[in-house]
Structures are given as C-alpha cells and as structure tokens.
Amino acid sequence: MKKLPNRTCIGCNTQKLKKELIRVVKNKEGQISIDKTGKMPGRGAYICDNPECLKKAINSKRLEKCFEIKIDETIYEELKNTMEK
Image (cartoon, rainbow, N blue to C red):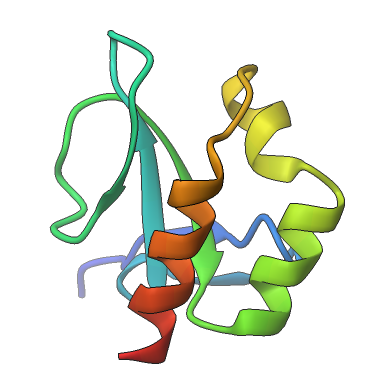
C-alpha cells in the first residue's frame, strides 16, 4: 500500500493529507500564487480549506515567515475566494 503524503497547515498546525490542503507557492522570481494542481515549482506552504485557519495565519504572519517576504493583500483575498467556493 502506497503511503499518502501529509502536510502541516500553517494556520492550525495540524497534519492532514496533502490533497485536503490548499498550497501557496513562492517561485524563483519571488512571486506568490495559489497552486491548485499541487505541482507548481517553488517553495510551498499549506493551509486548511477553513477561514479560521486563514485568519490565524494572517494574524501571526505565518506566510510572511515561511516565504521571508511581505505578502500582498491580494493573495489573502484570493485565498478567501478559493475557500468560499
């Protein structure tokens, strides 16, 4: 039986299956985007599909710490819209 990959949510710090989480990616040029396929190249961070986790990540600036750059507000808005769908 194949082992399924687990990742940790940056909001609530719980481990879940990779396919249950939303991946945010920083590419080599320093651009931040949401990776819907889970296969984009670059540094990735994962967050639950839960607005509470997003709120915790924003308040603690976890994405900024993971990627070591200032995160634009449009990325947070895009994540909120993704979670609402």
